Length: 256
Length: 381
Image (cartoon, rainbow over all chains, first blue to last red; front, side, top):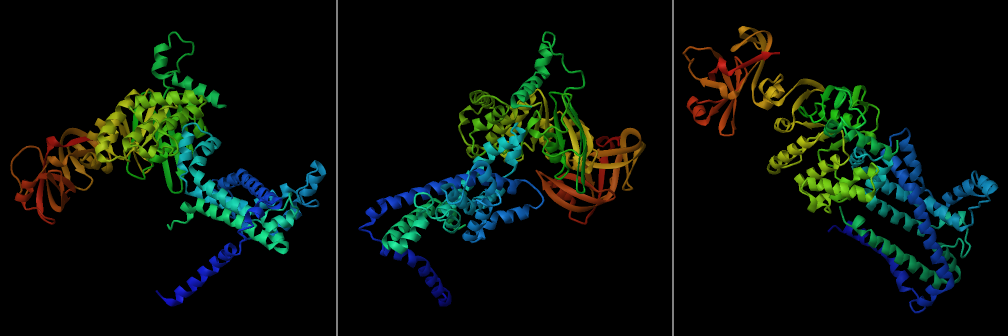
């Protein structure tokens, strides 16, 4: 084993694991049950789960058809569309939040009309949290589903057509069941991303306990006033992440 | 058109064929005029440098085989019939109805794909029920229909089995049941036996033959295997390079092939030439004597087993063809040796192993090849 490779490899490993270990070491295990059952924590956790789940649902409803469009329909500028779809993956979330404000804020390009016509205001509401999380998380789902769709044999759709199925029926009854594992993996990925969302959420939806204060926001705030609470909250998010990873290990952890 | 309309239209069409013939004196709707029933297609598909131009006609109950080498355009023709490839020209009529612009899902056409394409997430029963369900049947109705089809195929006990647990022969029968369950007026089979191993092939071919014989509408199958084509079909259409090169009954095509590809398939030596009475001047320059009395362009064919080889120029009388040839190669062919010859006339000869050994044949050796005129077969080109 060459030392010049082994040494940095070990440093890298420690670098990634040490912070997580520190979290466990410094965790206030004795007061943990009290911390986690406190009203604030409970409220933030509920809100986080609700918003992440809702954002995933939104992503599924509009992201799966978008993935289908990118994978199955030939059109001009498809490459550009795909690039735009993946942009939020690399965009700093804060920028995403600002962009959302410009689009859907009270004086935003579209938000103005929503406010004038329907009295609908998204910023600084729970719905705003869902919008911000969906904006950041949906690309993960689209990319994952599109990849699965490309790998799926389109001739099954042809077979369905010869049996009298319309294109939509073929998608619903044949393609969707065939790509279900990919959709599930993409949904989990999007959900995990939405659960940890911080930048876009705090920019677009603010930080109001019970309304827009999700777990990551609560952790950040608690760190300034009550570090023990911050650690407890972090532990919860760590546990969720580990659970997600365990759920997806067959897909990604097996070396292929 | 809603699913219900289409289903009714399909059911109505299904009443053609035997049922209609049996009931036409009493039932109100008059049968379609003579010549309108069945398939009448002129398929033109142009793509890049390839051009498919094939005419097909078949009456209900006919089984038509498209036979040809790989890349000849057979599968393209099949996909055009199913609506999976658009026609760039020609027409497509089925039972008198224009189908050129009808989308795949609205055509009364069933397809058995080469690798079957059974939906892997559905049981055999649900695969077969898929079509009836799309055509508007209730869930229970579709399943009952599917169960009846599986029973007909002798697969009732596999109803709840997923496709990956079916053997090749079983999967083929499920695919056939799935296609038939939509009650198509045109059944298409793409290389129906290609995915099977040699042992199951024999059995499946026999079963498929009996199912096709029962089928009351038009069936078109695509194959590169002459045996499949001849066993399964009443009429063969031979396609090479996107064009029809010959059509006829299996027996006719086996006896009178018109291209090298076909001659090779049915195991004949085939030459083109010009006949003047019993003498045919072959295109290569050699001359053949035949028993047929013909004039003008002809084909001359004879089987490799009709050829005898001699080291010395054989004497004797009788109408006999004799060519000076050179051995190009030898290979075993069953219990015989097939000798490829060049020189006076390129041909294949079949010899027993003993005869080959006595002649001391090896590549480059010069021999006389003889064929009795009575063993040749000449026919107009």
